[in-house]
Image (cartoon, rainbow, N blue to C red; front, top):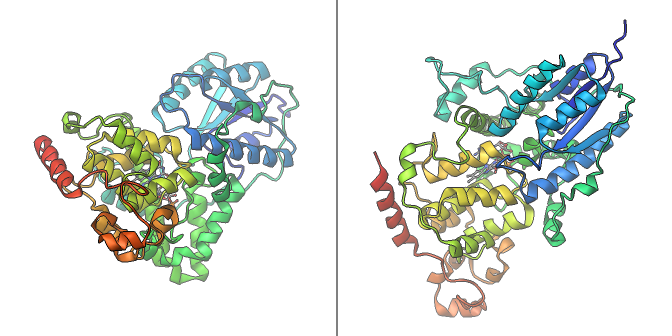
Length: 481
Ligand code: FAD
């Protein structure tokens, strides 16, 4: 007998139709499907999406609405605490089962437990799926059955088992339930920034949604992947995939990427070295989520307890200058301005700007994490927290405390001609490459020729790099155990 009772499928950070195990399972029940997305901006979640994420979410949902319309259905949009809203919808539509992809963020995971217990009491089944990572955080353990704290053995273990199943195909058709449920209009959620000029750069740079994700992937494999290992550290070239926001919002899955890579390698074996290095970076993503799952306080508190005693300094003026790309240190300013304009920053530059903030300025890493959270289109609880703690030296597998990036030598090494700096810091356009990395050391005549007056049309450095390095080393020495 055909079961006509509907099932409810909730989109979360899995804003895609293809390779979505939870959606496939809902479709395979043969029952009519109701698809929803809940904007949880009313609960006490301490990590509500920041400005750039909201912009992305708006556009990604818009694309998802189009995809579902092509399949003959509608996306029900509602606002409220996620667990409560899903429960209400399930009751209202009298569904037999609720399907969703699991959340790894501590707050979302708690909501899932609440929801399941309430659905259980109503005899509604809960079906929860993975698919966001190569491995679920519980699957990879040390021989002592403990979570890993160091990336290299973690990834070695992953590689021993890495052989993902074929991705699920996009459903060809979907039997949508013919029920009338209240739905908001996306426009009324006001996810787009009120300062419209801010979104201009985002719009020029990105194409949120599943199609945009696939065009990034194919473009990357048609070009940059071959030299990824060599060029991934050069910020002036597009040497990396720029898939991070697409991965964050679940518009594409690691296993889709993995299978695409295997197919590409079968006809182009010269891509092997670049592909291996690229897949390893996806391993770092799995590792961040592994850490977040096992140490849920990672976004707020230092992984290494002794860092709770670190003598951080409150300095809102320096923080502001750093945020605005006005530190007087060209590579740092270029990175911070790239972030403001595009919602993304090159990985090497992320490490350098973060090091300046937490080590040279001794500003708590949580301040930098919060700014990135608000301004990155790929703002991601696991990767952001792990990235900041790595730089601060307080993380699980962190950079040692004495590794303090020198932004001048980094700039000379990775942006030797100053191409990246000139792109984002036009004030320095006319400075010769030799002096662009540290304009404060340039002879007066060179500055004059470049129409630069430091302290007037470009800032003097916010901090003495040598003295602040020593200050940081002393501070770290004090908490070292
Ligand atoms: P690619 O080099 O093409 O790598 C492919 C994918 O691997 C990325 O899309 C990303 O999902 C993953 N990846 C790459 N590097 C890392 C890494 N170091 N850690 C974890 N995953 C990685 N990444 C985010 O996605 N969101 C963040 O909020 C975030 N915050 C960061 C903060 C700091 C201080 C630092 C140092 C790094 C942060 N990263 C973050 C990691 C990294 O900078 C970005 O993932 C990367 O720059 C994204 O560019 P891409 O997609 O071209 O990367």
